[in-house]
Structure formats: structure tokens, C-alpha cells
Length: 321
Image (tube, rainbow, N blue to C red; front, top):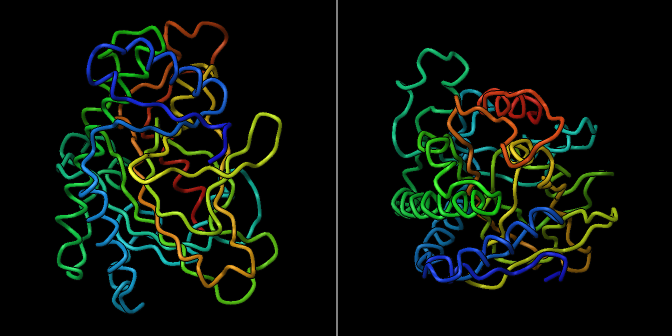
């Protein structure tokens, strides 16, 4: 993988003997590139393997079966979204062709809709999950994986707090009623040439506080834009996760930490046959009513406070085709 994105071992954090060192390494990565690769995270590899097996089996289903699982609202972060129904570059104002990937989304496992019934726009973000009947192990595999990501996401937010000179538990009550999503992303081997400007996933920044990405590598992968304006490939070894911060964390830190542009590019024409790619991302979105405001440790001129849910709603609407 590129040397621009550091690999950070979290084991010393969990041991309790190296929390300060881990936090310093994470802070440096978030300030310079906004991406890091983590090892020593404690997530059982069997959970990861089972989630990938279930997602692969789902995407092997006939298109008609997958289409039955589309949400009624095409912008809803639930259920199945077909190829060319999303366009992440639109969130930046670009007029590119839509993305060459399909996705299946789940959200929080706990029903939190009643907690935000007084906020009309919150309903879509706390809506019920849509589960496929086949493969039969999809729901249990993804449920276990989502739960593991919830725990890891909470740990990472605690590391972030220490890295920002805040109490370790500072973010705990801002993510305890989160609306995080877990899409399984499928990039099938392309047939024919893409349209001009069309890629697997358009250039964008992530919307929430952080993303935890697992992937099985294949030609045509993830790239991040470095501070000097160049695109560089980023991948991870088996058992590692790619982590990046999103727009809300950048806003919380008053721009000290960077929400970095990234994309998923097309494979070279001579490697299309071997380019089927799968990734599973956990997008940690804080509580709908969490106030995203400049942290006390990040002084200076800053944007006014805003609710996390309102920021997210605007982004979801912007990316729809």
C-alpha cells in the first residue's frame, strides 16, 4: 500500500500501556492525510470472512431478486441500490455519469425511531432495515459484523478524543443513538467501456465522523487525493481496516483534521476479467441531534454549530441520481 497512509497498531491502546502513543499517531494521520490503516483492532477475522461470504452470495442472485429489495425512497440508506443509481461526485457539484457499483445497506440494529419522532426529517435515517431472505445467513452475518463495528467505532472515537486533548469519553454521549450505516459495496467486473468521466465510485468526501472499511483487493481500487493534489492507491492487508475521517469530524476539529477526497477507479482494460471487487464500510454517523460544533481544543474562527442529522440529510439528497 502507499506509504502516504500510515499503518497504526491499536493493540497498545487495548492493553492500556500505549494509549498516548496511539493517540499521537492517529492525530498525525488525521491532520496530514485523514486516512490510516489499523491493525490489532480485536475484530475476529471469522466475522469479517462470514460477512464477505454472505455479501458475495447476495450479489450472485438474479437481478430481479435484488431489485425487490429496493427502498421505496431511492435516497434511503436501506436495502438494495443498483448500479448507476448513486452519484457521489454530485455532492461536490460535478456532473459526472453515475457510479458503477451496487450496494446493500443496513442501519442501526436497535429501533430508535421513537426517540426522534418529533424531528420529521429523522425518520429516513432511523428507518427499519430491509433484510433479504436469501442468502439465509445474510442477516446473522451482517448483524454480528455491524455490532463489531459499533464497538470498534466507539473505541476509535475515544482514541480521537484523546488525540484532540479531550476526555476519553467526550464523544460517548454523541454517538450512543447513532444512525450509522453499513453498506456492502459490489463493483462487478465491467463489460465494455465506461462513459467519459465514469468511475466505480466518484470523487467525494465521507459525510459522518469516521469510516471503517474492509475490502478484498482487486484491480480498480480505492485512491485518495494527497495534499499535493495527486491520487494515490490505498489498500490494506488481510486483517487490517482502512479508516478515514468524514466531514463532521473535520467540522468538529475546525479543519485541523482533514476529510480527504477519495474515489474508486476503473480497472485497466486488460485486467477487467479479474476486477470484481467487494468492500464493506461502516459509516459512523453521530446521534441526529448531536451538535457538531468546534471543540474547545480547536480554537479559532469556525463555522456555526449544526445538528449531525441535518448535515447528513443534505448530503443524502445531493448524491441521488
